[in-house]
Length: 124
Image (cartoon, rainbow, N blue to C red; front, side, top):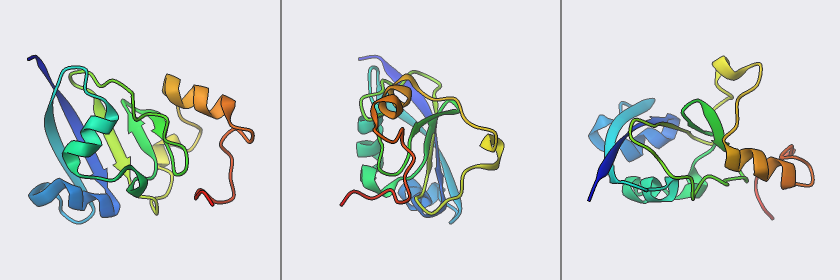
């Protein structure tokens, strides 16, 4: 079966899912997955419950945030870069003027009554 390699960055407390590659503030892993693997497959490989992640970027595009994770079925490709930030991380500085969105995130925000703007990001 064909495979892909994904460049994974784990920031903040999520670095612990990087095992020995984690240095306490981040971990960077190159993970080989079967072709057509999704973000859910990647999270499973990392043994990271999806609820533990905060903001997520795929190739620099916002794909998930606390309380809104439409990227679980996003198909990953060889060479993709996926960055997972812990829920207590601040918005990354380089995105201070906004961020591009994955197609899944754009559809999810449009369908949300409040377009994804919340005072809190936990479901009751």
